Image (cartoon, rainbow, N blue to C red; front, side):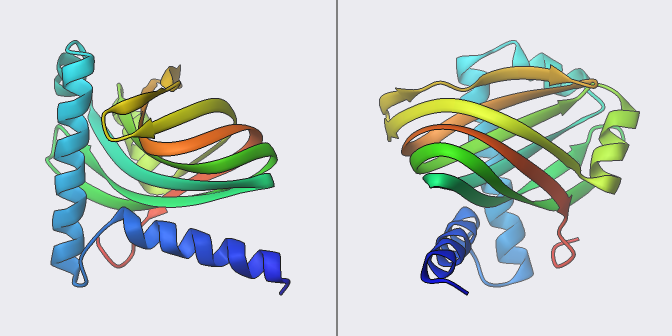
Length: 185
């Protein structure tokens, strides 16, 4: 393993560990729920109409993610939970990203998925999801700065991205994969 690869693996491991606190299963679940509540509150404050979308949807998911962009490669990872509004069931999930393209920086961001149909919700929790391609700019620390993120609708799923902190400029083609967290479900 090259020195660069070792550094990248170390950065991703550090970022994933920072995404959720706690040592025990219950502590990790509690940390994910706290993150979910904070993210939804922040999203509802900036986009009040989203609260009705979430309430009327088949379900929703909230994820915390951190990325590192190192010149021609990007890596990231995170955790989250998907809530089924009909049954109340929750599915804890992980996410990972890898890509190539031009970029530099580190970005900590949140994703909110709103599943408009049972089929979209079931598919996501059962099989995960992969997609790619991203370009953005972020310069944010606490309440200072700004970030270009946004909203996208794909296959009966609306996705919102909220940048928490980071300094990044990147245009990459990357794959993002979501899967069930075997240790938390």
